[in-house]
Length: 75
Image (cartoon, rainbow, N blue to C red; front, top):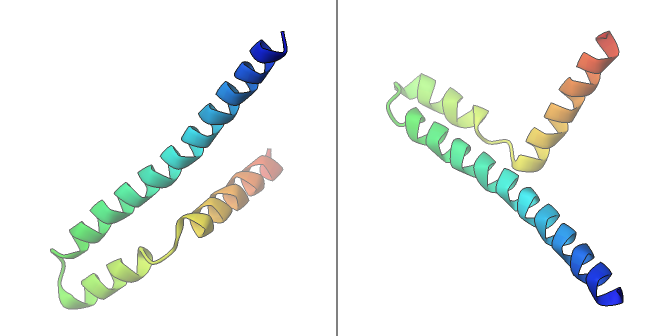
């Protein structure tokens, strides 16, 4: 009984850990692709494009949470 509970708990924790890593990896992959697209732009556009991509994953998560909170407040 205790072994089954421990096994279930570890499985849930493992899935939660993987889902967090997946979101972070996905964000960085998309950011890398966007930075690659910046390489094909003119000088001024290139610098603006790179500047838009400077934010990190934590900043992205905070901005997204704030947008969702303000969206929920409107409803």
